[in-house]
Length: 196
Length: 195
Image (cartoon, rainbow over all chains, first blue to last red; front, side, top):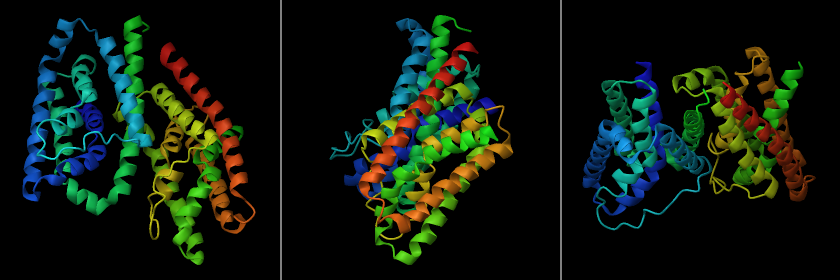
C-alpha cells in the first residue's frame, strides 16, 4: 500500500499538473470553451495509454536496446533535475504556445503529461520498488486521476487560486522533485559501479 | 546551545532578510504607511507557520516518498548554491514584483520568506542527531525573529539604507551562503556514497 502511495506521489510530481496549467490554458485558448474539457480528457487518456505501454513493455525495450537500469536511472535523474530546476526558478519554456488549431497528442499528451521523466519513472518503478504489475498500475492510475482532475479544472483553478499561488505550488513541487531526481542519480551511480 | 546558534545563523542567511528588503519595499509601495507594519508581521507569521509545518512533518513526507537524507542534502545544496550565486551577482528575481494592491501570502510569505531553500534546510535539520526537536524549533524562532526585526526596522531605516548598502550586504551574505551550500553538497555526497 505504501509502495503504491509513494510511487503515485512521485508520478504525480513528475506529471507536474500545476506547472502545466498555464501551458494548457495557453494552448487551448483558441479552442471553443465547450470543447476544452473534452480535449483535455482525450489528451489525458492518450498520455495514460502511452505510460501504460511503457509500464508493460518498458523492461523489454530496455533489454532490446541494451540499456541497463543504472544508466536509465542516471539519465532520468539528470532530466528530472533540470526540469525541477525550471519549476523552482521558473524560467519556463513558452515553446509550445504557438498552436492555432485544436491540439492533438502534441504538445499536451506528449511531452507535457507523458514526458521523458514520467516515462523513465514508469519504467524504473517496476525494477526497484519490487512493486508488482498490479501495484504499479494502481499507482499510475492514482497519479493520472489526480493530474487529470486538476487539468480539467484548469480554467477554474486559475481563476480561484490566481497565477501566484499556482506558481508557488509549482516551486514547492519542484523542490521535492530535485530531491527525488538526486536520489535517482545516486542510485544509478551506485548500481553502475557496484558501490553497495 | 552551540548548535542552536549555528542553525539559527544558517536559517537567517537562507531567509535572506537583506536580499528581501528591496522586494518587500517594492511590493509594499502602494500600501498605506500605517498598514505596512501589520502586513509584514502577518506575512512573517504565515512563513513561520509554513516552516514549522515542514519542521514537524518534513520527515514523514521524505519517508513517504522514500527520499534519503543525503539526496535531499545534495539537492538542497545545489539549489542553495544557485540562490547564493544570484545573490552575489545580483540578478534579482523579479517574480511577483508587479503586484497591485495589498499582498497576501504570495509573494511575500511564500516564496520569498519561506522559499525552497529554507524548506530544504528545515527538513535537513531534523536529520541531525545532535539537534532535538525543541532545539530546531528554537533555532527557527531565533532566525525568524532576526529576519522579521530587520524587515520591520526597514520601515524606519530605509532612508539610511541606500540601495548600495543593501546590495553590498546581500553580496556578502551570498558569499557565506555559497560556502554553506558546498558544505551541504559534500556532506550529502559523502553519506550517499558511503552508505
